[in-house]
Structures are given as structure tokens and as C-alpha cells.
Length: 273
Image 1: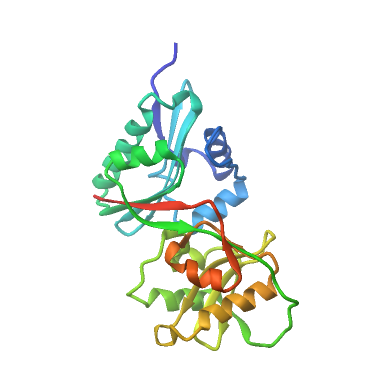
Image 2: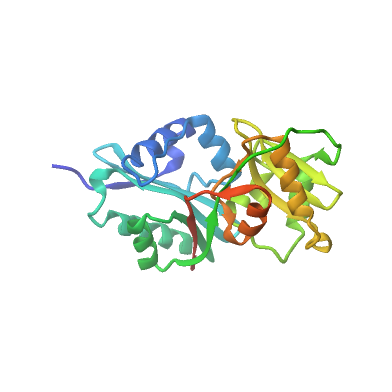
């Protein structure tokens, strides 16, 4: 007979152990998912993981579920949430989500965000029952083809922090957590600027490279700078792609710049606490 499920702070485990637990809990998930310890540490540190607020649920001493909570100010995000197959369909998902929401309210958070893959109907239904509301669809892109790269000197490499600061001072934009400047500058990669007005963050390792985000100065928008920047990146980095974290409103720009939208999409969801 199984004992009750116990809630524990994720701070009791290190990044390598949490990576193993997360991969284990995602068994049989809609989209196959595994992560190693180094990637776990790099990714979730950039997303501002709170080890004390993240949770590992154990049963008979064995980890059975994991929630990764990231926090900035009075805003938190459910960065990952997974249950072992043997716990699914028994109401534990709702129980654990209610605990996370109650704890967020208790520490004074005002908003909680999450992303859910389109097609994960069970997860979407759970989050909607808990009060989360869809905000936008997030998509990814892959470069269709590229021409032979010719160095023109137009793209200048800069410190990623320069681009992040530019984005942070633009009070009119609200970007998803994964493409927000607070995340971008902490991740390994390079930043480029075109004509001192258009910026791009690119992860060059592991291959193939990924466009993390674009930014164009407000006064230079509508002048084709972003399209030219994407075209130069596509030529410079064959096979370049993006994660499924780009607002769908960017689709016309990417598609007109030689990219094809990936079939996998996500909903960004918000719960006002």
C-alpha cells in the first residue's frame, strides 16, 4: 500500500538530480522531453528559478511529480510541471496546481504565467479549470534555405547586455518570459546589431544556431530593418531556427524573410492572483 504524497522544496535536490526527476516525470508526454543537468542549470537559472518555491512531490520516498517555479518581482511562472504516469488521472494535477497557486498568493505574487503545448488537451483543461486564461499563441520557425554567406560588415557583434538594456527601456512591449530581456542576456550566445537600430540574440551552441529574439528601435520600425536582419542571419547561420517562444504576430515577418513556421505551437496563459 502506498503512503501519501509528500510535498518538498526543490532546494533539497541539485540541478542534476532535478533534471533526472523532470525527465522521468515527463515519461509518455505528448512531446518527448529529456534534459541533462548542465542544460537544466543554464536554462532555468536564466529564467530565474526559485528552488525554494519549486516543488518535488514524493511517494514512498520516490519523486513522482515536479513543478519548476520561476519568479521576478511579484510575478511567477510555472516553467515546468510534470507527473509520473502512475499519478495521472487521479486528481493529483489539480491538487498540486492549487497548492502552487495558494503558495504564490501567500508570498504576495500578483500574476502567474505558464505555457502549454497546443494538443495537450488534458493540461489545457486543467489550467483553464484553475483560472488561467489564454493570452497569445507562441510559435517557432525554421530557415527554409540560405544563400552563400558573403561578409559585408553590416552585422556587428555587440555585448548581449547592450541589446537587453535597449529592450528593458521599451515600456511599450510585453514579451513572453522566454524571450524577455531578463532571460536573454543570461543565456550563452551572441548579440548582433544592424545599422545601430536592429538587434538580434543568437545561440550558436549547440548546433544548429537559434534566433532567440529580435528588437528594433521604435523610431526605426516599419522600415524593413527586421526583415533585413533576419535575412542576414539566415545567410550567416545556415539552418538557423527559433524555439517555440515567438509571438504569433511575428509570423508574417519571419515568413517573408525565408523562414517556415514549425507545426508545434504553445499557448501562453495567465492567472491574475
